[in-house]
Length: 199
Image 1 (tube, rainbow, N blue to C red):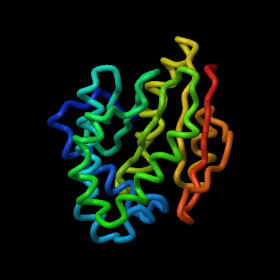
Image 2 (cartoon, rainbow, N blue to C red; image 1 turned 90 degrees about the horizontal axis):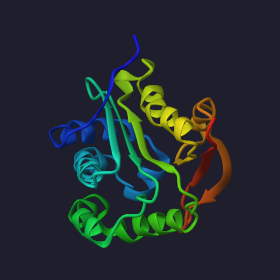
Image 3 (spheres, one colour; image 1 turned 180 degrees about the horizontal axis):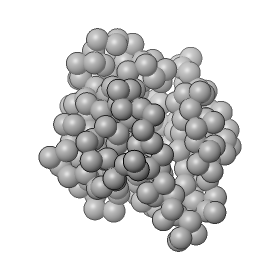
């Protein structure tokens, strides 16, 4: 059965947070930015919920979920990928709680990602995750296709950073291609930068 995808509302934010926390619980970049799996388990959901809420309030971005919120995707519309100062301030408290003494490390990651972010207008898949208990049901693929189908209609590219090398083939099946490997600062793991031309 093909998952039914819808735009999330703010009442979905806690469930989005829990799903993304579960999805990223073994992610090398998130584990390196927090260095504490217990802290991530306790506070990661609040951070993702706050981030999703900000994206929802922007008006142009898309926070997509399936009917049971087993998966979630945060897509930034062309020209809307960069967070404003006001948005950063709203994320400050959840960020300080989650990253604690490693906040400067998390900020360095964001800065290095922003420095290489493409200038050409595109849809940006900032976050995509499926709860491990819900994987294998096509939820992630449906969350991607909802926007890439639109990209194809409108002749727009799409972009993402994969924080796991093992996920690269998955994104390649959706038309994304690796453009660069970005080693993160302060001795961190790598991100794989991936671009998708309209098809």
